[in-house]
Length: 157
Image 1 (spheres, rainbow, N blue to C red):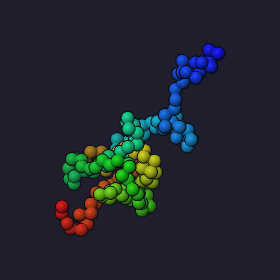
Image 2: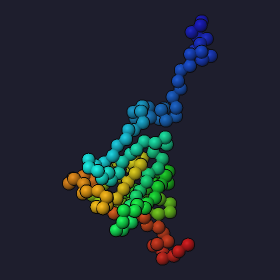
Image 3: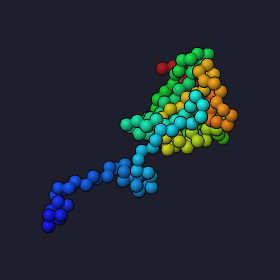
Image 4: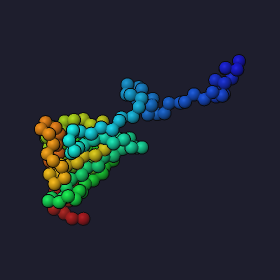
């Protein structure tokens, strides 16, 4: 009777799975969160995943101000990413409510798949002032542009 009492009234607490644990199990995903991962073997990393407390919530997209070593960019929340457009493996377009982020480079298919799975926390343009050229055959992001509607209409707000 003691075992029944303990089981009913919780004398031996059993850990209850969280919502994300249950969903992961239902979808056949691993029990542990994704580990850190970056693309590229050299010093330049075009994109990657750095785990945080809020897994898969946002992504930083950084480019370089022309002719400088100054970065600029945006950080977006994945919940606002409406669509990912692509042209081959050389261009991605991230459609957000207030802008379109155009990413141009080479071998970007893996990045597109990681964005769909919310497994990219940073994307960065290559800058020859900062990094040596990446090895041949590795992904590279050559250009990032943030296009806003007011720029297309010629209006300023």
